[in-house]
Image (cartoon, rainbow, N blue to C red; front, top):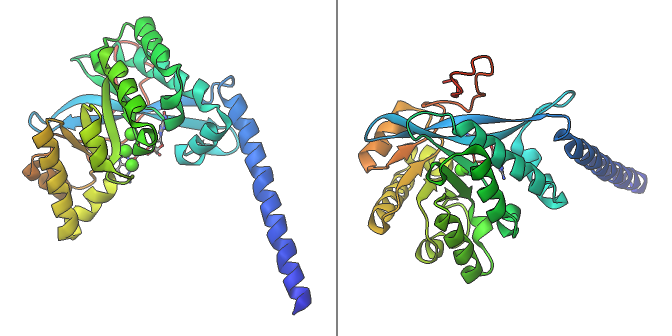
Length: 275
Ligand code: C2E
Ligand code: CA
Ligand code: CA
Ligand code: CA
């Protein structure tokens, strides 16, 4: 039994070692990804419910690695944040998204995810300004999406950064609303242009009357404070109708369109493909 225990410890240690080695490899690959042109953006449509019209797109980062295949953002963004690589990657995402969106028709906006690390960087504002200037995209057509983890810590500092961003004319959305801490305190304290209701509530609202009540209340809350709501992850017609009936302003999800690459072959229509 003792022997077995030792074996288990060794196996555990080997497992840890493998995980650490793999992490090192992933980090090394991530460091090279930018110069090797392995990143691209996929764009997912946002539909406004009163007009049933596509009013913009969210840019989602994709890393295509020659051996690993498509690496999902959830498995490399945290590493990019820990290593500081997110600064360079995030800057590229901003420039790329603004550059593409500049040629979209009808005032369509582009929403860009900004991580907590980027948000805390003193360079964010100048990166926003530079991306807008370089692309010619009007500031009102750029939206930054922040999760609640970006909004913890020093409240007055955050409020002043948000005010700086909005002074440029860039819009601010709170992403994954309801999944973080002190969501309601954030709504009192911070200026916002959009509340994105997390997909988990949308999914649950169909089956569960409490979740339905929560979504109803968040939509009403947004209405009362003058901030439009967008529901994420809409996959079924039933979910769409439910959100429409609740008075949610906009939706996003596979039902409307999956994140898709731009048509590279036709320079006249630099518009995302509908999935
Ligand atoms: P997010 O900002 O909440 O983005 C929505 C995620 O849900 C995306 O996953 C999208 O592909 C997925 N999604 C959209 N509609 C549906 C649906 O109807 N059903 C389901 N099951 N999923 C749906 P993705 O692209 O894997 O991105 C995951 C997360 O990675 C994002 O969550 C965001 O937090 C982060 N991320 C993506 N791109 C960037 C980026 O450029 N910068 C930063 N900092 N984070 C990013
Ligand atoms: Ca987002
Ligand atoms: Ca989200
Ligand atoms: Ca989410």
